[in-house]
Each structure stands twice: as structure tokens, then as C-alpha cells.
Amino acid sequence: MPLAFTNDTIVALSTPHGIGAIAVIRMSGKDTYPIIQKYFRGSEIKTNGKPSVLYGHIVEENSIIDEVILTCYHAPKSYTKEDSVEISCHGSILIQRKIITCLINQGARLARPGEYTQRAFLNGRFNLLQAEAVADVIASESEAQLQLAMHQLKGGVSNQLKEMRTQLIDLTSLLELELDFGEEDVEFADRKKLKNTATSILKEIHHLSDTFQYGNAIKNGISVAIVGPPNVGKSTLLNNFLEEEKAIVSNVAGTTRDIIEDTMIIEGVLFRFIDTAGIRETDDYVESIGIERSKKMIRQAQIIIILYDHFVKKQYVEDILSETRNKPYLLVRNKADQSDISIFEHEISISALQHINVDILKKHLIELSGTNVSPLDVTVSNVRHYEALRNAATALQNVLDGIDNELSLELIAQDLRMAIYHIGSITGEVTPDDILGNIFSKFCIGK
Image (tube, rainbow, N blue to C red; front, side, top):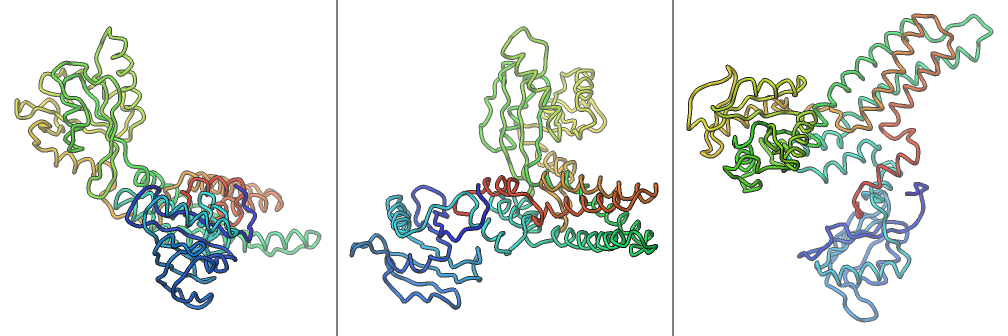
């Protein structure tokens, strides 16, 4: 998507496509008011001043298309910091299409995905990290996801990164000045201060990086694989979690032959539950494929529920434990209504069929996921941000090594510039156009 700023006026449907009670069409750009005035009949449109809400009709060639509410925003007090209007019309697809066609006929063009937010970013309404947070707010499915996205949107991480970058720029400026006077015996950048500042910022970056695992789990949902022998109640437990008959339940061993996945929110946190094929020796080709996929899910999931009953051999469970590779897991003995014989010391006894102690299992999941703490004000949840922080940390470590090894100022200054670049790439100060295009292309049209 081209990023060169244009004076085009753009239009798009901002509400979901389809039939609904109301649809909202958004238009933004320098010709917004000349275009809308050709079709709006009602209260007088003021082309400057405070935002206003007007009642009227959209009319084409003396024919009323629809009765509408027009919300007017004037630059720079709008989402894009441009002149903008939002047309609230009836949700008929035909009406939506007619209104958008009228606006295009007068010079507007269809907006590209994310172009409204892109313009807001390019016009300085917020930085790139906050722009990405807008998409996260829209995509939020759980309370925890929404809180995390709102923290990002408010600028918690941005402010910390801005302070880091400012300190590094100040130090780099002194080093550059010292290089300009290379033939003279002067020292503008105090080496002790340089080392202390780089050490302090490196510590902050490591702290931010350490929040990524938590932030990413909240943002994308926590994957939980339910594994164990056939016919132990894995599908019943999944159905219990989801409160619907998602998986087929049968007394016949090997019924589940493929991965079944769905999501559920527990205490505001999104979990992705995965029902796997029962792990056993089998000559059935299709079932064996499902079993291999089950083992793969053990390696990929963030939390493992090892489900078994009182008939299972202890060695069987221990063999599965060896596959978890030190990942968090819960030992859960199902069918507790049929037997109270414990197999492991720290197991959780439930009956998925009788709904016994399933709520206790959910609480253990929250505790094991680490999401039972309040979301941090400063939390990294985006892979792009995490990678940039790691690159910045590498550059700063090179700065410290360079100081200790008394390397030339040119090399130290170059590493400082790299650290500044990687930090700035997160908030958009120095992000290349191709990366910006990729980011905004993932937004929905109309946002």
C-alpha cells in the first residue's frame, strides 16, 4: 500500500458488511464538505468549528436515497485530523451502495485497509505503536485483551520508549560532536555517564522484553492441549469447558481422530482449548495421524492438561510428561465420581460428565497461565516490538562492550545509532514504508 500522503478524499463503510439496523459510512479528506453538500439536504452544514450532528436526507437528482444523521468533524479535531463526516443511514446494502457510489461520483475514492488510521498516524495524531493498538482494541475478544490494548493506546509503552530514545540521542549527539573535534584533545561525552545510561536503558529493555510472553499470551489467547489415553473423557471435558457439544463423545476408543479447537473466556482471559486424539499404539492409519498431531500439539501448546482415569497406568502418564518438555501442565484425574483412588500426589480430581470440580480446574488454569495478576501498564504484546527490542538490546550491549574494550568512538556511535533506530522503529519515527504498508494493510477497511 503506498504511503506517500495524498490529498485524496476517501470513503468507506465503517460498520460490518451486511444488513443491519444502521450502517455508518465515513468520508475524510480536503473535499469532504464540498462533496457531501451536493447530496445532503437538511440542517445547514458548517464547514468549520465544533463537531456537529445534523438530521436530513441524502438526495440524488431530487430522489431521496435515505433519511440520515450526519456527524461532522473539522480539521484538525477529527480522527484523521482532516475534515471528516460520518453518515449514519439505514442498514440496507442497497442504500449503503447508493450513497458510497454518489460520493465516489463526486471525486472521493474507496479507502484502502487501515487508511483512516494510517492518515491519523501520518498527521501526528498518535505514533505507530498506538496505531497498532487501535487494531488490537477492535480485535479484542476478552476483558484482558481489551485492557492490554487500551494501555498501549494510552501510551504507556510509548512514553517509556520515547524517554529511552531521547537519552540515547543526547549521548550520541555528544559523541558526534567529539568526533567533529577529533584532532583536538576534548571529551564531550563522559564515558562513565555513557556507560551508566546505556546500562540503565539496557535493563529497561530487558524488563520490557520479559513482559512479552505475558502480553502475547493475553493478546492471542492461551493455548491449552487436552491430552491422554483414548476414552478417558477428553472430548467430554472440552464440551464442558465450552458449554456445548463441540466434540463427539463416544464409549468407543479412538473416536477423536483429529484436532478439535475452540475458545472460551475464563475470568476475562481468552483460552484456546484443543481436544486431541487419544495417544495409544494403533494399526489404524487415520488414527495414527491424529496421534502424531496430538504429540505435535503437546510441543506447541502453552499449557498441557494431562487427563486420565483410575484405569490408567502411572507409567503411561509419566511418558506423556516426558513429552511436555518442561511446559506448564496439570495432572487431572477424570471420573472422580467412579473412584477416589489418587494416582499422583498433585493431581486434580474431576468428573467432566458430572461437572464435578471443573470450576476448580479453571482456577488452576488461570493460576498456571500467570494471568491472575492485573495487566501491567507497560507490557509488550506485539512480535514486531519484541524483535525490535531484542535488536536494540544487542546494539546497547555492543556499546558497553565497546567502552570496556576501548573501541573507537566511530564504532560506539554506530552502535548507539542502531539502538536509537530499533527503538524508533517501534513508535514509527524511523520505520521504513514497506513495514508501515504491511502494518496498515492488516486493518479492516473503514478503519
